Length: 480
Image 1 (cartoon, rainbow, N blue to C red):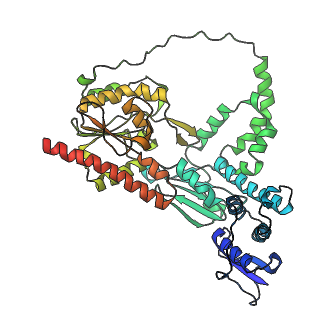
Image 2 (image 1 turned 135 degrees about the horizontal axis):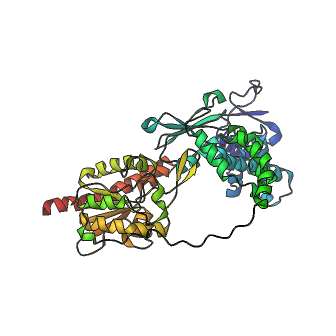
Image 3 (image 1 turned 180 degrees about the horizontal axis):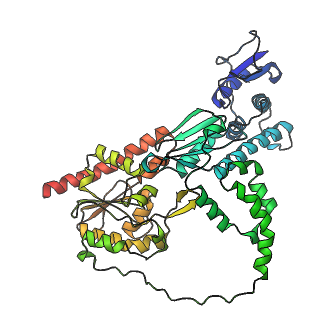
């Protein structure tokens, strides 16, 4: 009997290496026992091998479909998953098309486990609720979740992309994931007592949830299918769900009983979109005051207008996409995690941020509320075009030699049309006789990259783009 002890519950690389060696050595599935180091009840006698060295036999290959299936199945909580995958691998050696036989017991069982893992990942994405610990700059967001399978490492990159500008932790009994704005880290699992149970915006979220609850569209069975009861206990709105369901029938009857009302007549807009004034005549302070009252698009209901800042005659204008949550609260551009990334890159490129003008294509934070969290949303074309007047007037007031468009939204505003970044990145483009443009990525794009090597490589490309801008700054300084 061969005993294989993997390092941890999700040790796919260890299983893959051991399984390949076992197959090449002709070790049948019945002669292999799989375990995980530290598992209770999995202590074996010293006889037999506990690890595998590379075999000298000829290698063999399997399809990428099997590898994808195996990567997901390894995350299942079934203790027999390692043996089951090895049995399927053993059979694939002589039956290369086995995965096409959907009714085969091994294929069906492994496919079902992989599906359960992906379903559990989806539920984690949907039902994690963060609570705030601390306030303002010291704030951190913590959530508790109880996954059915070992999916924390699989699911964590989603939250890093979605909540890139806030530090968070997701606590689970198996493994805890943490995001510091730059990288994901993991620590051992904890008990539920370690998780927060309340925050200052809890009651606000409950009132909002009750307001948007529509009894006329309630389908209890469909809701419970999408949101099983076991997840209710971790949701802030959990205590309201049963009373809202119970009162739904009465509320629906009341809505039906009300007399039909005539539709409202279309009202003439009280405020027409602001007409751009002469761009050349606008000094920055005057523009800032005018933009504070802008109602040209629906985004004005954010906390405040986040206008640009920097010298009146800066040789370089950096244009971002839109303010984030931190910028919306502070009223200044690029002060959150993306701003910190930008500051570091500017310093490495040899650019003093105090000598450049920094602004955004869209001056208001576009978001969708999720409890206490405000989730960033990409501005739509009408919103970008409505805000373009402010960019044009800033451009006329600052008169920079170079405009650096960071991200697709910024490029669309600078060029007045959809502009692919990859095709225009890294080269100077004439805007007019006196002004050139340079297209690069937005710093938040770098924050969302989960792979450390890719992030480092893309960061170097970003710094390289900014070095081109630095050359323009030096040339402008000599001309002055």
